[in-house]
Image (cartoon, one colour):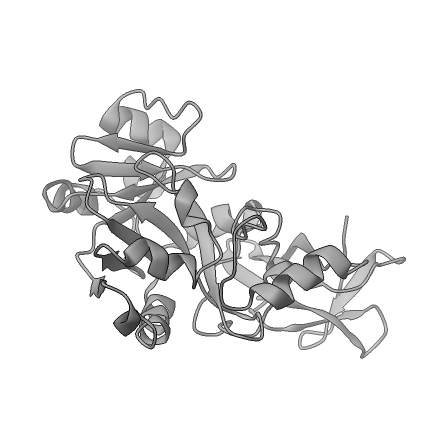
Length: 292
């Protein structure tokens, strides 16, 4: 019962897009923001798929199958994984690859202290991915939660002791300035609006992929990149609400991720301008907030 409230979350809103076959590596390399050559059984990556204008269609964690097969998995929110599948379906006929959405319901978020109870001492060392029997555990950024890709055998056991409310997981993402795209934010934001140039979702050393030219131009030529700020409010702040300067109607940014908590909301705002004053407003709620 205690574990239900402290550190094990069933990610029922997540699913997996599996891409396999001898052409899968080349196929993904030309489409997504991560460098596939750096992905192996011990190293996963945050990544995203963008449209030709550089706007983010979906975000996900990219992992490689432990069996040695040429199979990769994209793990993320269900609606945008479905959107990813539809987008990639246009290009896959040109490669010797197969693509399938898997909804086996075997994805969990687990706090590190709980993972030690379940799996013992996991030695991540320099890698971010550890295989334990038939499970895969992925740690990224400074998140409190580890992503567990569980076998069907363990999945039933974990579901019995898991919390199905994803709020803890989302709050952990927000606290680490990690924005997952959902159906409300797909194709609205550039990677730089979401801090993707700082958290490893974009590899600036790899070759061409969809949207790459616009993203690279922004990285190397923009003198004033957007910044993310973590804020809290007693009111319920929702994604895509408009951020303005205090006492002004002029838009300077947006709320890009939010979660309800016991005190109101925790959320991330992306601001596209250097702020001389340290107070902003949320237009829809008519509230003023201080930023650090």
